[in-house]
Length: 536
Image (cartoon, rainbow, N blue to C red; front, side, top):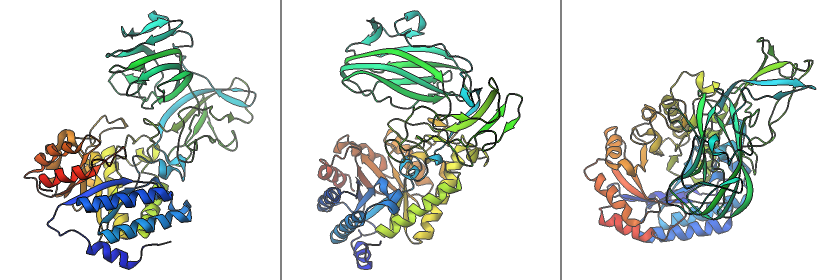
């Protein structure tokens, strides 16, 4: 369905700002399946126009699955389009969720980027090959109050009724345990936690390798007030045989938190990925390969990427069985496979090297363009935190930076085919050597340097590197890019001032955007006044 008539497109172009004027964008994430959301967006467009904004950047996870939305989605989109046309505002839809990929993984959760498990031990009993930790890990339930078992405990943490407790403090409150692990294995960490009036940015479970690499990035989901609750995370040891496991709070907290019954153990086929680039290899210890469907039953994890809905992943659940045929009890198998890692509160990254991924991106771009008929699209290459580990990526013999560059070229080509005269924009961070295009970025397997070589100079950079604003703006300007400054970030209207100062004398800075992650539009007008005072 294409609700936008040609006259609407003409109206949008007629309402465009003069070429020599600055653009003012507003970031508007929404769920257009909901009537009230469309009404909210229309009201914000009206406010934005009155304040002098020229563009609205639209984001909706459903852009990646427009083939499955209900009819009213298109009705709501048409209402927003008509409002934008009447106001003379230009709409910019965001496409290509390659960093925050859950919306694309809705179609196939097996397309998640995989971390490798190599030669995990499984032992046959009664026709089932059961995962067997190899070697055992030295932290078991009930050892929480044994202070000598910990590498260190912060002074703010004390034993209380068999648990470890920290009350209100302005300092760190952590426990740390040193562990010997097997490289390239998946591990499951569990702990029971109780809180009372607990206020902090987060309570964390961290796993840190000897070189400082953080191996565990999933938020355990500890609430401000909760009775004893067991929390779970998983991680891959990668190339490490020694790590430090932390439970605790960094930077202080209010209220109280109790920790008890910590445990860690190597785990089996949790979230096993099944696609060409993530092969499952099963062999006997004397290196005889076993064939799926003949020597063992087909393997899939029924809980992969579908809880609480399609495209969402749980760090821990019971793994699927490995059911074997014709193998005697006691037979020892070595199993290699791949699994995803969940970053923070649910982010899972897609593998860019599978042809099926490119097909999904192409389908999304076509549907989004057909729906919105926009003359500018934003590529959502942003905080791509897991990349370059599975065989689909390894077989290409490209660094992570070159993988990102190649994907940027691919995505640019898709948009050029769909909208030959259209404008393309992209978030800055994954192409910025003063931001995230660096070595040792989260669980990226190598350096992201040279990612920027995949960008066409005509691509507009939406630059949000406030920490190195002057350097970043100059870097992209030198490469010939026009730039839009992504400011605000819920820090108040005046936060744009250092940005505007850094932009003075930099060629090609064509505008700025009111960017809120908290759906806070209270400062929309005040931010516009700051832009006006700064020449935008």
